Length: 252
Length: 265
Image (tube, rainbow over all chains, first blue to last red; front, side):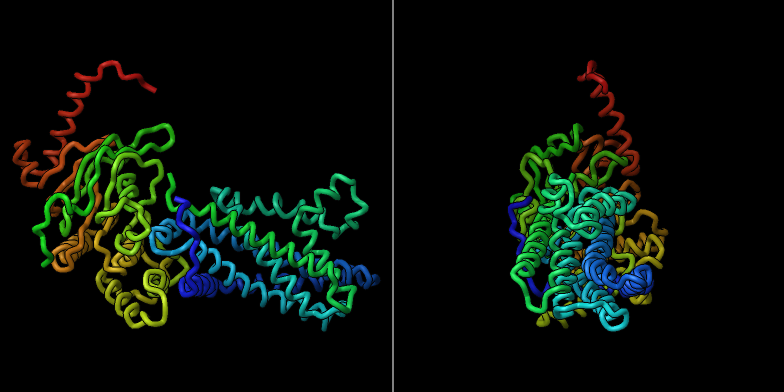
């Protein structure tokens, strides 16, 4: 029943986050992929635009925001799907665990992974590959963390509509690719067809990419930057709540 | 020993007109039954007769339940029941990528969170692992265990909170005879020494003889609610299995007589 509020107990949330990280620790290959692939991709990008470092600056910064979103989306959707299909979710919900505890636990664990991932990718970009950031690299990291939470939220939400891991993986192109095309990475949003521009105005990734670009081009923290991170954080929170609604104690 | 002089009003589980619909199928059809506290009640019947659905209704994870269903004095699924009822599903629901002890540590932390209960949790975890005889495998990953071992991890999780009511869905499937005997001894210890009420399903009829009471099910209905001895006596059979078959045949005859033109799907 949905009458019980998603109460939050810090101890249970921490226990859940610890458990998720412990599961991950038994899977060193996934950890390696999570941490190394973004670094390799950003390096690849740097040399694809070898003669044109201006393009690398623009796209590189956006990618630093997009990586955590995509990887956390995939990791969370598979992890929660497993939780649903293995019966552990039913068991947990038959125990005194609040839905909020479970979701916050996942967000905390994958948020920590995202911080490690973004630290590596950002450090590589700024100090080794020469990504030209006018603002503070810490702000890049903040946006990356919020993007990761958004990815976790979206992954949690779509896992409710996937009956198998095959389906869960297919949600990635369905949910992420349209945002990727419309977020302003390939062409500025104001040069798209007006309908698409309007659509891109309501997609959270547009603001994630814009936030990154604000840091890239401004020394100060701009009003647009605040707007961008508030929108991304708000979307993450909203989708997390929607995700909580898909965790049902009673099922058929 | 627990005080067993409670009356039927204080039964651990009591159902009146319990009905469950799944999709367009009525899985449970207006059941009335009670489960006595501190005793082992066996839920027996062929696969697909509604045993699992009944158990899910009792632990409060089944939707579309109508009728009255009280568990330990509260409506089934009430939040206050969550720490008091242990539930083991048919498929072992544990994390395959954690060790036995890590699994139990986590579920123990959900049941009794906080640093203050740390020592209590450690003791509960070690005891539960010992109860299901997995002490030598405590640090093995669940994925590396055999099917029977994994289902015992699942059982150990249910034992963690020393629940008053333990709902076990076919806990002995796929276990060898020695382990099955050991588990049944454990169930009796839990009922006799800790006063735990146990509702256990099985389709292995020889296990029925080890229950205090039996609920025999068939196609969403309860055919009989009695002790194994009384069932054998009533049907004039030597074993519970014979008694069950006798009752099933009788029910089929009755059905054919009373509902000759039931529409087929």
